[in-house]
Image 1 (tube, rainbow, N blue to C red):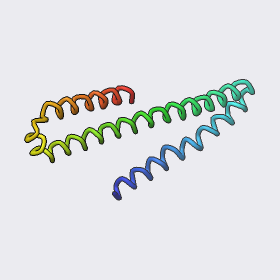
Image 2: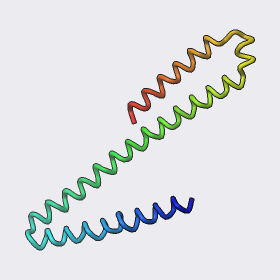
Image 3: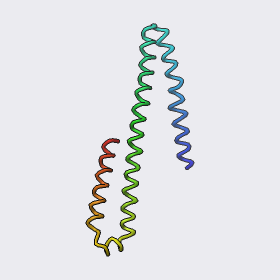
Image 4: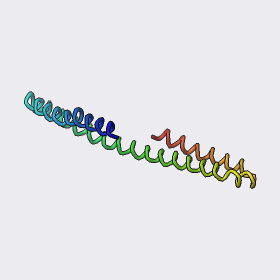
Length: 114
C-alpha cells in the first residue's frame, strides 16, 4: 500500500505538475513569437483535451461493462460449481454448460468493445 502511494505521488509530482507548468509556458512562448501561432497552439491543446476527455469517458464506460460481465460470469461459474450436486442430480450439466458459453460470448463482445 505504501509503495503504491509513493508511486502515485511520484507520478503526480514529476509528470502532471511538470505538465501544468510546461504547457502554459509553451503557450506564453508561442504567443510571444506570433499571435497566430499562439492561437493555433492554444486551440490545439484545448481540442486535444476535449477529444481526450470524450475518449477516456467512452473507454471508461466500456471497461466498466467488461468488468461487470467478467464478474457476473465468475459469479455464475462459482455458483454452478457450488451447486454441483444439485446440477448433477437434476441432469442439468448441458444446460449449465450452454449458459456458461452464452455468458462467455457476452464477455468476449464486451472485451472487444473496450
